[in-house]
Length: 109
Image 1 (cartoon, rainbow, N blue to C red):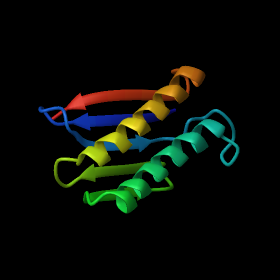
Image 2 (image 1 turned 135 degrees about the horizontal axis):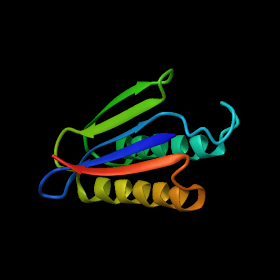
Image 3 (image 1 turned 90 degrees about the vertical axis):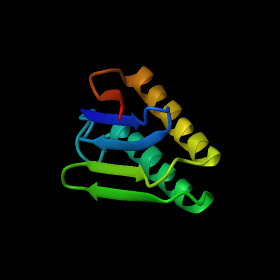
Image 4 (image 1 turned 135 degrees about the vertical axis):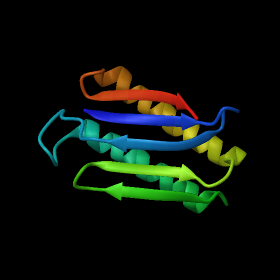
């Protein structure tokens, strides 16, 4: 199962997003759920990097299936919109494939 943790600050700004684990929908390399999550995550990171001036730090460990990105400052309006789009895509995957393959958590810091 893949777990995705959206962390926001107390004033409701995105702080970080962490995706970890493999969905387990199919064998490694054929898992469409894992692939969809990976594409959305990597595209969001690339979009933040190329389309905004926001600074993010990125950590990944392919063997463990972890990718995490964190905003260094309060996200801009454009960054907020990109992350909300990511969240919408993740929620759509969850609605289609359910809690067997994907767990979404929200927390505040």
